[in-house]
Length: 303
Ligand code: FAD
Image (cartoon, rainbow, N blue to C red; front, side, top):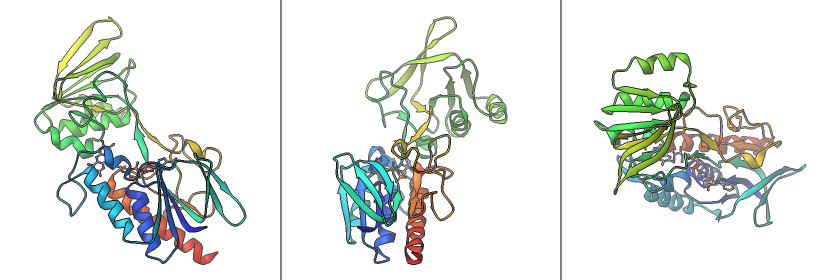
């Protein structure tokens, strides 16, 4: 068995593995796709001390750094079950195999919910974006839309309104779902239009985004807005479904953790976008990965 078995090979998992290995612990990583969301990212300009990098480059650097240590990397394998026995934590894999750890760090990350309209996949990173903290500055002085009028959509719109020329908010339902104070703040901004009952039909473009088409669900009329960017803000879904009934999760599906990364299951720690941590960013996930590995180390020396 491993001393520390990490599930997930994104920034959180890589960081946890390095911290564990540096404690001399026998460490393994199971990852469906080593690199995680970073692989889908074009330009990264907020990974402090690296002025600018690209997702695939950072993912390669993560792997190279992990390989400096004696870490078993089990890539392209998906965990589908977690079982606590008296001595170990067993992780069942989708290929039928099982791996064991004296402790486990869950770092399975999250995925942005897609709107699934024509143009979304085609223009990903070519105008279609998901993370305002990450990609907002790339649209400085341009026009953008935000799809989604919940808290994250309205927060994104307020944030973006300070950077871009104009923001159009499209909400499918007949009202915004965001907190009142956010809605008030949004409506006070001069460069924001809000449309409710708006069903996004298509994101248009040539080699990059040039507009968005939506249907007014009240009148059935179709509208087109010319713009350069679309932020999809209809939810970040943690990759934690497989832990249902075993590891405590909140109503968003995020794993609930203590300040040392511990979950409700003794020996099981968690880090990064799959948890209830505030804000989801590379640098935050890496810090959380380190915390969880140190938490696991503390657990091991006491048991
Ligand atoms: P992830 O990166 O999601 O990694 C999860 C890992 O777990 C992956 O290896 C995955 O394959 C694996 N996994 C999932 N389920 C299983 C399973 N059942 N079994 C085994 N393995 C599994 N952040 C920034 O700081 N700056 C940016 O510029 C930036 N830009 C972004 C742009 C885009 C398009 C996106 C999508 C995100 C961006 N982010 C950015 C956010 C950042 O990528 C995430 O916060 C960060 O990657 C989270 O790290 P993580 O390790 O927690 O999870």
